[in-house]
Image (cartoon, rainbow over all chains, first blue to last red; front, top):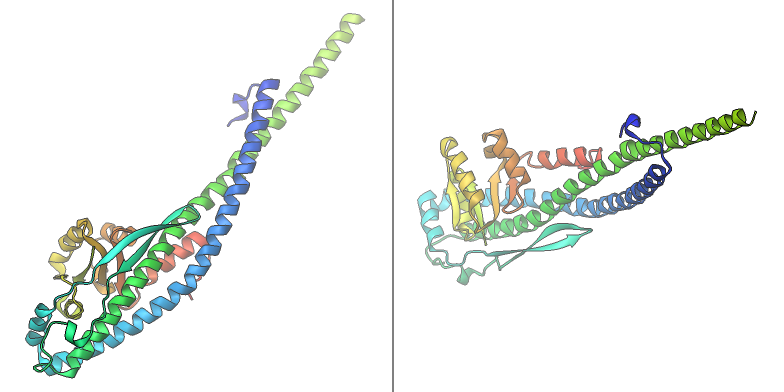
Length: 205
Length: 98
């Protein structure tokens, strides 16, 4: 709001005071929201770090096991065994609310299965393959957990950034401009009052 | 919803063993289209990719993967946390992922 656009009237001053009050209360609320979001973010950050390191470990183990299984069974045999598997892990995406931010909640069906439930024959395959399957089942479970936490973190970060921008805009742009306009009107009104008094004195004299 | 895996043959094979049906073996040429199709697939809840494969995709698609919530994209392999790390730096102002 440029100063030259402000009309120096009492009604405008009252209107500006109302706007400043509203902007200040909005600023206070948004600051509280930003602090709350940052607290939630810190809680999730530690979980995310742990989950990510577990995920990396699980990937390392799974890669190693599949390497062994490939060398024992051969690539084609493993591919044909993969076709025999029956159950597909299903996931269900729900949402939950963290301080107004909607984050996903992922529930999955059982990924880990017993040897008999897997669907391939146990007599014609080696234990290396069983270990590889087990390692990948664990890895998939970790992926599902990581997906939930990392998405929640991403969404929280987006909202923190947005709230920070709003807080800064109110703090450094909107409120100072309103205060400046208010001061301008007050000074102008005082000046008009002085002019009026002087005019009245001159008429009297 | 299901999990989907997009990557090279070696990468997807293990996931097939874990029972994941939507595994797509791709090359550098076919990767772009397959990733786009998987992102549009309404039945996919989580998309798993290797970090090295993501680096060959166009920048716009890489950022679409980073922003995607449904499906949620999980990158595995080395250096996968760099996007999240950058996001944290941008939002909080400090590198907290140490």
